[in-house]
Length: 444
Image 1: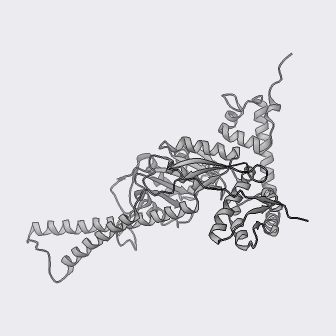
Image 2 (image 1 turned 90 degrees about the vertical axis):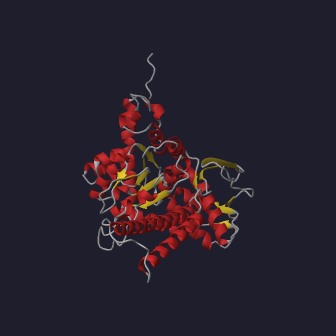
Image 3 (image 1 turned 135 degrees about the horizontal axis):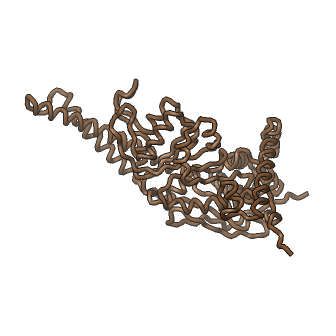
């Protein structure tokens, strides 16, 4: 029996554009491939100059070395005695400290810049045409041009940081730094120093003043991933920063004004965290100015063929392989799998399969997915997910029944449920709810 395959178009190209964020379309042969490829692309052209930063840092180092030689060597700078001598020496020491701070800032900005280039080159596009994704992306475009604080929610692996970067690159702050902080990855006793910096001697090991991530993001955007993991003390400090636009370094007493846009993300239910007292209610409302919800991959199954094509293209080029088509059985398997790890899990499966692929036809070892499905079923995760979906469907159907099928408006189902119209429309579609069946029948 011949193997059925889905062929890739041979004229697949990635168009480039000067726009910071845009959508690009490429039409494919409708007989054997995706009909349309829709991507939200972030511009890879970096507006900073790493060589200039390195050069300035080197120049500062030369000045510092000269001052130290003059100050600590066999000869001394020609200071006068008395008060003038003390003033000049104090000014010199202050200059040395400021130059040290500037050199550290330049060094860390260079590291941040290199990290930005690496991340953009790895995750450059948001791929998909599903209604659930398009509803989210339409909100991205609207909020990007503002300076509003954004809270991105969604399961692990749905692309929350990629959306944050897309917002930054379409904003008026695109020429300044995008600084990403994983709040869950930093020890709780170090998170304040990491975010707000510290003064020399603030704690054991603080040998010199250090800038925090907020100061490094000056004029740009700071992305606080897993913000729900912050400790109570750090939540208080973050609330003040958002309210007052001021920070205080650890061990410092002088408030420092910062001009930074805050984008936060979480895979936790922050409303539930507020209810059980683990997250501050006032901070939640400060962060939740403009909420964005990233749909899980199981709600955008129509995007899976596009994502498969995209990741195969990326990893096959890196591996020097020429993969021309996808086995149809493999594609069906990928579309039927629930993807608890979302796009990140799909990406890992594709990368592993490309490495092992020895032909021009892409296949995936079915046991990789079936084993994971069996593991999840044994742990009850899928049963819980299905139960929650059934409960959610019942709540939405009841709201539609009360609103006689109306979704939006003051008396619509979205208002009754307290969610955005686009979110409700997405859920109605993913749960296969027929909203028309709830419309009031005309009276005879």
